[in-house]
Length: 349
Image 1 (tube, helix red, strand yellow):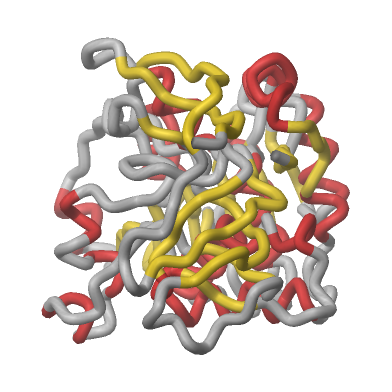
Image 2: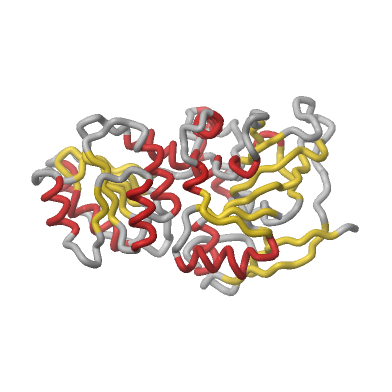
């Protein structure tokens, strides 16, 4: 059987694991609704780093990479609406569409997805030349979209989902905690709307400069400034009407609870299973504050993300800062992610 280069995760107990580049068998179509995709681009996600560090579960001996797009190479016998050569992007979070959450419009809470069905995390994903994907996970792309840009669709759809939950208003002071790749992508979506102020909280100079370049009104550096005092100064003592925690650790959750205004919304986006926090219920009840969890995205979010890229409404070239071939995924791709001197890193198999 023919082989291909792939990045395979090997778990080490409960403390994460390592990714190695290996030559594995090229996958074959087995189910009638399968589609064989030739992967053209895949993005490195912060989740990939957390998997290796033990902050997110993943299946042992699995090809990682869940932000990917490509072209159709072969289809199962029941797939009649796709043609060989079609440009496609993949929603790696496989949903059944028939459970109660799905039929109530809560796709992200799908009972099938909850059993561990994410491509590139629990099932083989896009850090390889080819990947087999079920038809219902595929979105076709307009011919005008470059596949190297479509790699942004998956994270952009998650940012859109977060933005929709935030439901920002023109009078809002919006604060995003963390100017990592997702914090900056969320910023790019929110910046499309007229709001009072968009304020980022970020300690790293590289990310501070990127946040300002993408439209932040202010960036507070928690290493050199008192976040609470500076935010109250910027908002005339009101605080943040919308707080988006794009990091998801205990420290950022605690910070969010110090800066949110009366009647504010807190969107918990960043995810780390090791995080914890203490919350006083009366602080929610008395001031009618709201807390939302933002997890992955919906089909509508995917369609919106594709349209934003098609219409050049998002500055893709500013968000994709690095590109490497697959054989440099570990040496260069993971390196710049660890150095935190990048926004979105694109890998070309």
